[in-house]
Image (cartoon, rainbow, N blue to C red):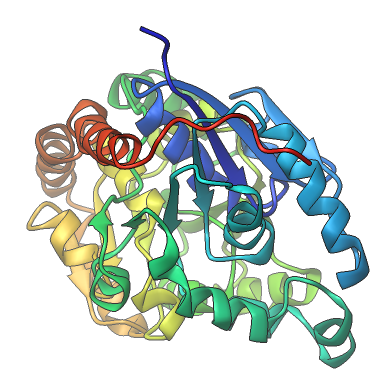
Amino acid sequence: MKRPQIAIVSHDGSINAFGRALVLADLLQDCGDTQLVAFGESVWAPARGEREVTLLPTPRTTLGFPAAVRALGRAVRSADLIVASKQRVLSFGAAALIRGGRPLILDIDDLEHPFVRRRLGVIRQAVEPDREPITRLLEHWSGRSTARTVASRALQRLYGGVWLPHIRDREGYALRASANGPAERLRLGLEGRFVVGFVGTARPHKGLLAAADAVAMMGDDVRLLIAGAPPSPGDLRVLDERAAGRLVVAGNVPIADLPGLLGACDAIVVPQSARSESVYQSPAKLLDAMACGAAIVASDVGDAREILGDTGLLVPPDSPGALMEALTSLRDADLRNRLGSAAEARYSAAFALGTWQAVMAEIVGSALAGTRALPGVAT
């Protein structure tokens, strides 16, 4: 029997949003032959070499949008099923226009319009296809998809759909963290330090200022290690000042090297501010840290409590004092080891890839069974 052809469409393959498309690719790999299609000139740095990606030119103005839709139609001509990552005009919007009669699964991993509003000024709002009014309209039209999956419980309450946290193939993470962590620690010049690690894109809602303030309240031997897309120079200066000069920036880390970097840390901090962007998100790096067997301190925002359970330390959002107290408690190596082992065990029991691939297979099977086979879309 011929395997279904599945196209996963991302609105921008060059930024961290593409990470969710990779999650979907891992979840769908047993459902059919998958194809990743993204707009942009390059692939997000940490994901380069992970999977083959078809890149399409990003339209700079609304006038270029019809050509972008035609290009997407040609790229996914042979797909039996389309999966749109995010409610954005170049993913869900464009996919809806070229789907024909094919099933379309919409995956929602953010409340999108706050991000679009913050990214665009008045002029760009007027000319770019990916702007807030259209994004809000697409959010309203989410029910027009064949099925919906969501990355957080807050999004599930808003849109319905099946909860799919950021599950990906993390096999062997704990072993790689243990084996490669010491070398990473040496490479970064962190010997003899108590290292608090943050992995992710340094954005305002991530709560990094609270983490920096917490580190400043701790001893001179503490360092805050940031790995991911670095902050702007101005934000970096502010963070370093708030952290009392104890900031270390590793830059973007390839996904393959992530376990070693997490293994170089004594504790992993997953801070969040109490903002709409955070409430509707479910941090992927929380699951990365659990899979590595890390000792974790997380803000009690969104899905953190449900995912982490009692295998890490939860603190109120935007509370440097609470963060400092939790991190200070993790100077106790026995406590770190107990929490790390518990987090790894919880990850293996509740968030292993195979379990969630079966959930996705049921969604795909239902979507395909509910539509007739159609020829490729004419463009």
